[in-house]
Length: 168
Image (cartoon, rainbow, N blue to C red; front, side, top):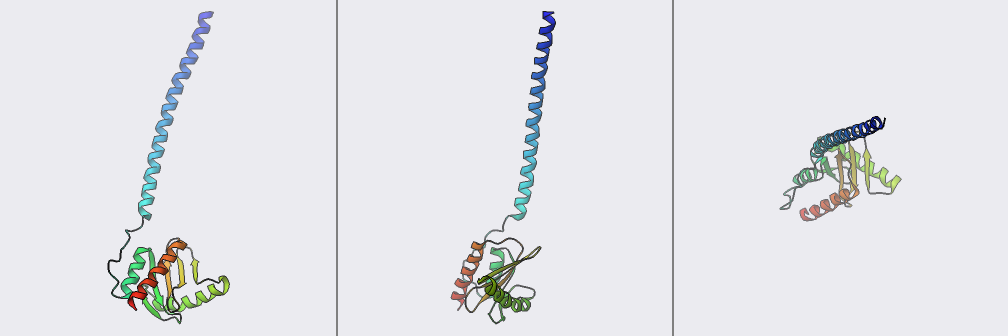
C-alpha cells in the first residue's frame, strides 16, 4: 500500500512537472511569434507614415512658386496657396488656386469672429484645411491630409515671413 501511494504521488509530481515544462515552452514560443508579428506590423505602418526626408533650403528660393513647393514637401501639405487678404492669389501649387483664394478670407473672418484667432483649421473626413494670416498683407491656405500640430503651424508662418522678407 505504501508503494502504491508513493507511485501515485511521484507519478502525479512527475506528470505535473512534464506538463508544466511543456506548457511554459509553448507559451514562450507563442509570445515570440506574437512579438515578431507585432514588429512586422509596426514596421509596415511606420514605413508607410514615415515623413519624407526634410528638404533644406540651401539658397533662397528664386520665386514664390518654388517656395510653395518647398513648403508642401517639408510639411507634407497637399497644396499651398499664398494670397492677399482681398482674395487674390500670389503663389500656389493647388489645382484650384482661385477657389482657395476666394474661400480663405471668408474662413478667416469667421475664425476671427468666433474664435478671435488668426489661424483656423477645418477638419473633414480625409483632409483638413488650414487658413492663417501670416502678415497683414499675406494669408496662407493649405490642405493637409494628416493632423498638423500647433508648432508646425507656427513654423510654417515663420518660414513664410522669413522668405517674404528676403524676396521683398
